[in-house]
Length: 167
Image 1 (spheres, rainbow, N blue to C red):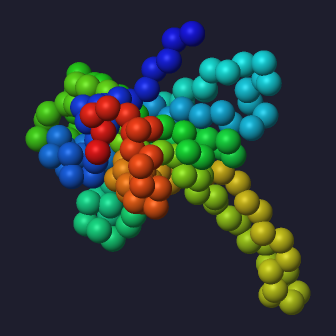
Image 2 (cartoon, helix red, strand yellow):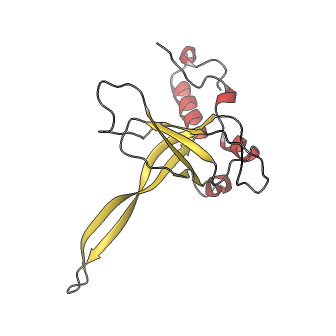
Image 3 (tube, rainbow, N blue to C red):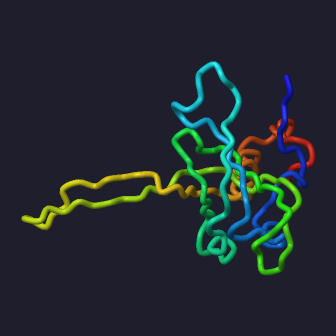
């Protein structure tokens, strides 16, 4: 059995490092997961979807704790890794393309689009239709690191489960 995982500081990208590279809107990502009903029970391989960073400037400015991806997410994708995809070209104003693949976060949830049907007679909401907008919220790697650190703080002596090279 082949096991692959992110095992060193070089394999993941904090918000600070994302800004330094720089990663920005339009940069390509892979979103991995096990969307419910789309993977048969006998299969253990993740579904890989492609997308792009749709909004990251709010995260950089501290106005948001998440980034928005232009990638379809479904129930079952939550917690799945978001990996920056290496590219030869960049839409970035500096013209520098990212040439490595790194974990930048985890899928959190899709952003629903809501359409409200209002009664012509009473002017009250009759029905609200929800559909998948094709946008996904993603938490940055920093949240993963903070969660691990909090767990280690609450469970002293458990650092033996900490992968080598990770903070």
